[in-house]
Length: 95
Image (cartoon, rainbow, N blue to C red):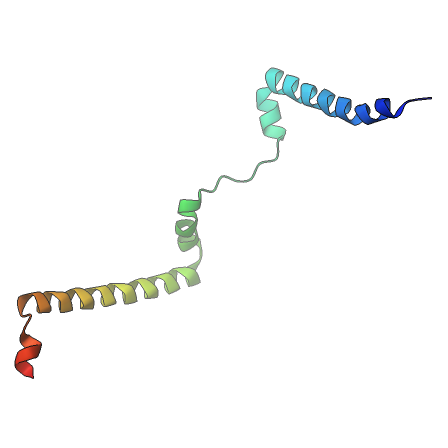
């Protein structure tokens, strides 16, 4: 009869044997192993939005509208700051 210690070591030995075989394949056939390995397409996260802007016309239109609104709001705020810097007491004179 086989002891329980032998049965418990079989999965460990099998895993080690698979790891050794994989390592040897990587050493002997690196290009083949790389070609057969599953991999996700290279997509860098910083450029994901840019790629979506280039491929999705609806997203591009929405992005441009939001960008235009933000630019106008920023320009209006900068203009107000500039006016206050040039004539800081203009509101006091009007009152």
